[in-house]
Amino acid sequence: MYIIVVGGGRVGYYLTRALLAEGHEVLIIEKEARVFQGITDELGSVCLRGDGCEVATLIDAGTDRADMLIAVTGDDDDNLVACQVAKHRFKVPRTIARISNPQNEVLFKKLGVDVTVSATNIILENIETEVSTHPLTHLLMLGDRGLEIVDVKISPESTTIGKSVETLSLPSGSVLSLIIRRDNKPFVPGTNTVIQAGDQIIAVTPPESEESLRIALRGS
Image (tube, rainbow, N blue to C red):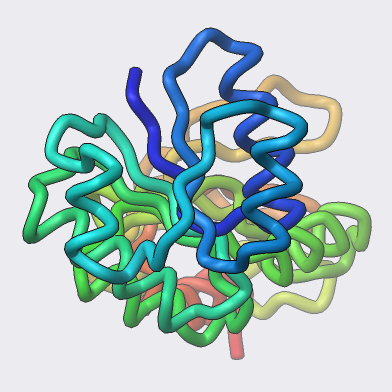
Protein backbone atom coordinates (compact mmCIF):
# COMPACT_ATOMS: atom_id res chain seq x y z
CA MET A 1 0.00 0.00 0.00
CA TYR A 2 1.27 3.48 -0.89
CA ILE A 3 0.61 5.93 1.95
CA ILE A 4 1.37 9.65 2.01
CA VAL A 5 1.87 11.30 5.39
CA VAL A 6 1.53 15.08 5.47
CA GLY A 7 3.50 16.52 8.37
CA GLY A 8 6.90 15.35 9.57
CA GLY A 9 6.58 16.24 13.26
CA ARG A 10 6.70 13.62 16.00
CA VAL A 11 3.37 12.08 15.05
CA GLY A 12 4.24 11.88 11.35
CA TYR A 13 7.75 10.63 12.03
CA TYR A 14 6.77 7.77 14.34
CA LEU A 15 3.75 6.89 12.21
CA THR A 16 6.00 6.62 9.15
CA ARG A 17 8.47 4.42 10.98
CA ALA A 18 5.68 2.09 12.05
CA LEU A 19 4.18 1.93 8.54
CA LEU A 20 7.59 1.25 6.99
CA ALA A 21 8.15 -1.54 9.49
CA GLU A 22 4.87 -3.09 8.34
CA GLY A 23 6.14 -3.13 4.76
CA HIS A 24 4.17 -0.21 3.31
CA GLU A 25 5.53 2.28 0.81
CA VAL A 26 5.44 5.62 2.64
CA LEU A 27 6.29 9.20 1.75
CA ILE A 28 6.31 12.10 4.22
CA ILE A 29 5.63 15.62 2.98
CA GLU A 30 7.27 18.26 5.20
CA LYS A 31 7.74 21.94 4.39
CA GLU A 32 10.24 22.92 7.13
CA ALA A 33 13.84 22.48 5.96
CA ARG A 34 15.21 21.49 9.37
CA VAL A 35 12.58 18.81 9.95
CA PHE A 36 12.89 17.57 6.37
CA GLN A 37 16.66 17.21 6.71
CA GLY A 38 16.38 15.38 10.03
CA ILE A 39 13.98 12.82 8.61
CA THR A 40 16.10 12.37 5.47
CA ASP A 41 19.27 11.86 7.53
CA GLU A 42 17.59 9.17 9.61
CA LEU A 43 15.14 7.43 7.29
CA GLY A 44 16.59 8.12 3.84
CA SER A 45 14.64 9.23 0.80
CA VAL A 46 11.16 8.87 2.26
CA CYS A 47 10.61 12.59 2.75
CA LEU A 48 9.60 15.22 0.18
CA ARG A 49 10.07 18.86 1.04
CA GLY A 50 6.97 20.87 0.20
CA ASP A 51 3.52 21.99 1.30
CA GLY A 52 1.08 19.10 1.49
CA CYS A 53 -1.81 21.49 0.84
CA GLU A 54 -0.53 22.45 -2.60
CA VAL A 55 -1.47 20.57 -5.74
CA ALA A 56 2.04 20.87 -7.21
CA THR A 57 3.58 19.18 -4.17
CA LEU A 58 0.99 16.42 -4.20
CA ILE A 59 1.68 15.83 -7.90
CA ASP A 60 5.40 15.45 -7.10
CA ALA A 61 4.46 12.99 -4.37
CA GLY A 62 2.56 10.79 -6.83
CA THR A 63 -0.71 11.27 -4.98
CA ASP A 64 -2.70 9.99 -7.96
CA ARG A 65 -1.48 6.48 -7.15
CA ALA A 66 -1.75 6.75 -3.35
CA ASP A 67 -4.02 4.36 -1.49
CA MET A 68 -4.23 6.61 1.54
CA LEU A 69 -3.28 10.12 2.68
CA ILE A 70 -2.84 10.87 6.38
CA ALA A 71 -2.57 14.53 7.40
CA VAL A 72 -1.01 14.94 10.85
CA THR A 73 0.31 18.50 10.97
CA GLY A 74 -0.41 20.57 14.06
CA ASP A 75 -2.80 22.79 12.09
CA ASP A 76 -6.39 21.59 11.63
CA ASP A 77 -6.94 23.83 8.59
CA ASP A 78 -3.89 22.42 6.80
CA ASN A 79 -4.96 18.86 7.55
CA LEU A 80 -8.44 19.52 6.18
CA VAL A 81 -7.16 21.12 2.98
CA ALA A 82 -4.61 18.34 2.36
CA CYS A 83 -7.32 15.69 2.73
CA GLN A 84 -9.79 17.55 0.54
CA VAL A 85 -7.28 18.08 -2.26
CA ALA A 86 -6.21 14.44 -2.08
CA LYS A 87 -9.82 13.23 -2.15
CA HIS A 88 -11.28 15.50 -4.81
CA ARG A 89 -8.29 16.31 -7.04
CA PHE A 90 -6.43 13.01 -6.90
CA LYS A 91 -9.25 10.59 -5.99
CA VAL A 92 -7.34 9.08 -3.06
CA PRO A 93 -9.62 6.32 -1.71
CA ARG A 94 -8.93 6.94 2.00
CA THR A 95 -8.08 10.11 3.91
CA ILE A 96 -7.30 10.46 7.62
CA ALA A 97 -6.86 13.76 9.46
CA ARG A 98 -5.48 14.58 12.86
CA ILE A 99 -7.54 17.25 14.62
CA SER A 100 -6.46 19.34 17.59
CA ASN A 101 -9.88 20.87 18.27
CA PRO A 102 -12.56 18.17 18.80
CA GLN A 103 -15.23 20.67 17.74
CA ASN A 104 -13.87 20.43 14.19
CA GLU A 105 -14.69 16.73 13.93
CA VAL A 106 -18.23 17.16 12.59
CA LEU A 107 -17.06 19.73 10.02
CA PHE A 108 -14.29 17.42 8.78
CA LYS A 109 -16.80 14.60 8.35
CA LYS A 110 -19.22 16.81 6.43
CA LEU A 111 -16.42 17.92 4.12
CA GLY A 112 -15.52 14.37 3.17
CA VAL A 113 -12.60 13.36 5.41
CA ASP A 114 -12.99 9.62 5.95
CA VAL A 115 -11.47 9.33 9.42
CA THR A 116 -10.59 11.91 12.07
CA VAL A 117 -8.29 11.31 15.02
CA SER A 118 -8.49 13.62 18.03
CA ALA A 119 -5.94 13.17 20.81
CA THR A 120 -8.28 15.10 23.12
CA ASN A 121 -11.16 12.71 22.47
CA ILE A 122 -8.92 9.66 22.87
CA ILE A 123 -7.83 10.84 26.31
CA LEU A 124 -11.41 11.73 27.30
CA GLU A 125 -12.67 8.33 26.19
CA ASN A 126 -10.05 6.60 28.33
CA ILE A 127 -11.12 8.73 31.28
CA GLU A 128 -14.77 7.88 30.61
CA THR A 129 -13.95 4.17 30.61
CA GLU A 130 -12.29 4.46 34.01
CA VAL A 131 -15.12 6.47 35.60
CA SER A 132 -17.94 4.01 36.23
CA THR A 133 -20.51 6.75 36.74
CA HIS A 134 -19.85 8.44 33.40
CA PRO A 135 -23.18 8.22 31.50
CA LEU A 136 -21.93 7.66 27.96
CA THR A 137 -18.69 6.28 26.57
CA HIS A 138 -17.66 6.38 22.90
CA LEU A 139 -16.48 2.95 21.78
CA LEU A 140 -16.10 3.19 17.99
CA MET A 141 -16.80 5.64 15.17
CA LEU A 142 -18.20 4.09 11.99
CA GLY A 143 -16.95 6.96 9.84
CA ASP A 144 -18.15 5.65 6.48
CA ARG A 145 -21.72 5.37 7.75
CA GLY A 146 -21.95 8.45 9.94
CA LEU A 147 -22.64 6.34 13.03
CA GLU A 148 -20.92 5.56 16.29
CA ILE A 149 -21.09 2.80 18.87
CA VAL A 150 -21.57 3.98 22.45
CA ASP A 151 -21.90 2.47 25.92
CA VAL A 152 -24.61 3.99 28.12
CA LYS A 153 -24.57 3.12 31.83
CA ILE A 154 -27.83 3.02 33.78
CA SER A 155 -27.23 4.54 37.21
CA PRO A 156 -29.45 3.81 40.25
CA GLU A 157 -30.89 7.33 39.87
CA SER A 158 -32.03 6.80 36.28
CA THR A 159 -35.76 7.41 35.84
CA THR A 160 -36.01 4.74 33.14
CA ILE A 161 -35.42 1.85 35.56
CA GLY A 162 -38.38 -0.54 35.39
CA LYS A 163 -39.45 0.64 31.94
CA SER A 164 -39.51 -1.63 28.91
CA VAL A 165 -37.50 -0.86 25.80
CA GLU A 166 -40.66 -0.37 23.71
CA THR A 167 -41.73 2.56 25.93
CA LEU A 168 -38.45 4.46 25.50
CA SER A 169 -38.41 7.41 23.09
CA LEU A 170 -35.26 6.44 21.21
CA PRO A 171 -34.06 8.99 18.65
CA SER A 172 -34.39 8.15 14.97
CA GLY A 173 -31.53 6.05 13.68
CA SER A 174 -30.50 4.76 17.13
CA VAL A 175 -30.54 1.03 17.83
CA LEU A 176 -29.93 -0.86 21.07
CA SER A 177 -27.54 -3.69 20.20
CA LEU A 178 -26.59 -5.34 23.48
CA ILE A 179 -27.20 -5.19 27.22
CA ILE A 180 -24.48 -6.21 29.64
CA ARG A 181 -26.06 -7.03 32.98
CA ARG A 182 -24.24 -7.85 36.17
CA ASP A 183 -23.95 -11.60 36.85
CA ASN A 184 -25.61 -12.40 33.51
CA LYS A 185 -24.44 -13.09 30.00
CA PRO A 186 -24.74 -10.18 27.56
CA PHE A 187 -27.95 -10.37 25.52
CA VAL A 188 -29.70 -8.58 22.68
CA PRO A 189 -32.61 -6.56 24.10
CA GLY A 190 -36.14 -7.05 22.83
CA THR A 191 -39.10 -4.72 23.00
CA ASN A 192 -40.18 -6.27 26.34
CA THR A 193 -36.75 -6.04 27.97
CA VAL A 194 -36.97 -4.03 31.19
CA ILE A 195 -34.21 -1.57 32.04
CA GLN A 196 -32.40 -2.31 35.32
CA ALA A 197 -29.96 -0.34 37.44
CA GLY A 198 -26.38 -1.17 36.52
CA ASP A 199 -27.20 -2.13 32.94
CA GLN A 200 -24.58 -1.27 30.34
CA ILE A 201 -26.35 -0.68 27.05
CA ILE A 202 -24.35 -0.85 23.82
CA ALA A 203 -26.07 1.21 21.14
CA VAL A 204 -25.48 2.43 17.60
CA THR A 205 -26.44 6.06 16.99
CA PRO A 206 -25.76 9.07 14.77
CA PRO A 207 -23.33 11.40 16.61
CA GLU A 208 -25.87 14.24 16.63
CA SER A 209 -28.35 12.02 18.53
CA GLU A 210 -26.00 11.22 21.43
CA GLU A 211 -27.67 13.50 23.96
CA SER A 212 -31.18 12.42 22.94
CA LEU A 213 -30.16 8.78 23.30
CA ARG A 214 -28.65 9.40 26.72
CA ILE A 215 -31.87 11.05 27.92
CA ALA A 216 -34.02 8.30 26.43
CA LEU A 217 -32.04 5.59 28.23
CA ARG A 218 -31.38 7.31 31.56
CA GLY A 219 -34.02 10.00 31.85
CA SER A 220 -33.50 13.75 31.98
